[in-house]
Image (tube, rainbow, N blue to C red; front, side, top):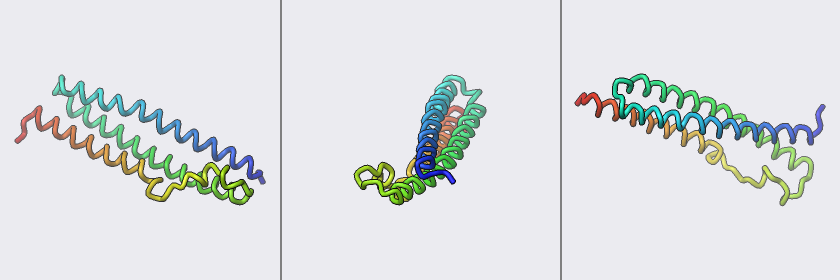
Amino acid sequence: MPSSEVIYTEASNWLRLINTICWQMAAMFIPLSIGGYVYALKHPASIIWLGSGSIVMWIIWTYILYMCINSANHCRVALKSIEEKDGVLREQRFYSNQKLTPHDRRQPFYIILTTNLVLIIAWIVLYLIKYDLS
């Protein structure tokens, strides 16, 4: 059975990996989506394809972030348990001192869902403006 130190190290590394994945995906998907929107402003014939692609990218990003956030929350629970079990001084308990409430843990996911809705509305508005379907 692995020691608490090994589990703590691996769980900490997993949290760092999840954080890196989330930031790298944001660095890729956000500029692509904004770029597609700007391109569609100048080339209205491509609104449907760019809008669909942009929305699909954000849905994929949302799903992956949901999985990552869920996994990170499980890691934090294990890390807090190890800190308490191993008798780490309160001032040195990195994960226990973060004081994340269940709402705080889900907040990034809610932000992503909100941006998904804003993105969908933005593409619909652009479509209606360019094709004047009123």
